[in-house]
Length: 292
Length: 202
Image (cartoon, rainbow over the protein chains, first blue to last red):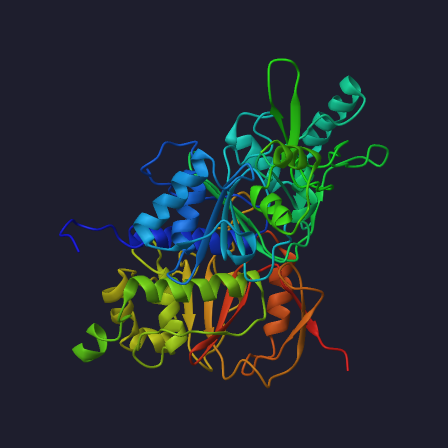
């Protein structure tokens, strides 16, 4: 033991946790509505997931097992540093395995593995207001939510079709929650939108810089906005993952050389490792093993 | 005058972890309306506040949250106990209250007398903590809505007959409305404003 002063469990002071906890309960009671909260300065800059970190810190307990992902990966800078942060300030058990986690903090992906009742997904959100790029005034967007006036969002999607022949929005694709609030699912690829619908897990969203918390309870309708003649579609990929051969998963493009060489691999690293451990192999994994 | 020991004793033995575990019960309760949550760690609030209602106060109230108490609770040691342990002060105005506590069998003000939030800020509504006789064994109500897979049943005992009417009109003004925590002993059931209740058809 050393004599250095220690932080309160999970870094935040108790008054801050209470304030955030009250906001979380109201957010759950009004699915998709953005509850303002007094976001604190965290020992990391805005934009690095301070909203998600504050939500996680307020719900985290000593029995939890925490997983942190950044674009699906457990081993990128943002994920590694947030995981290390909670190990340090809360001494909490951490994992990279989706199945074992009770709380999963995520930046811009939903794990491929189906989440279950005992799990909570915490999103880091940069811009919580789906209407913000259409209407910069908070007073106006608030009124639009109050009046359920979402015509502008449909105009935006329509203009996508007019310009590109299809809805060109591929991430942060707006959804309607429980038939009432239009919500920004955070910049997840639209590939993940269907996973939010009727999810067994509670989903919490924290936006630190913009000072908003919102939530989607389990078993809640989450519908991606679309038109009858241009229905919502998720991305599809021509090839399976180059390492594990998975189809129907979200793939990242990795540039291999300056001669146009590239590969597509699972964005969800845990899912990919899991599959490889089970003996699935993509064409480049076999290639790699032969070379060794 | 309440005795001093009633006021100064009875908070959480381990405030940080007790508040966390009670909060998780509340969060899970609101995320899955109708499920009965058993609080593992509680304090010992003065009568007539129940153990679970006291735990909710210790977990969520502070100087930012004016609380409204029924007249019976107001005359007991409860306001001083809450104020000493959380910093929250009692208010006589129902619309100013962020939390309202109602003891077992007390007369029930209409939900619309409390703060319902506004259309712009529906989160600024009162959360009512109501002590009931029991969370099971009462009239069976069917519950539907977010957090409920298909439908579920709740059978809270000791709610007044007007409850269903109050709740239906509370649901009708969504997104505004109050949220409920029903407590009995060391157990609680949460009802967010999204839950639709109806009499179970025989």
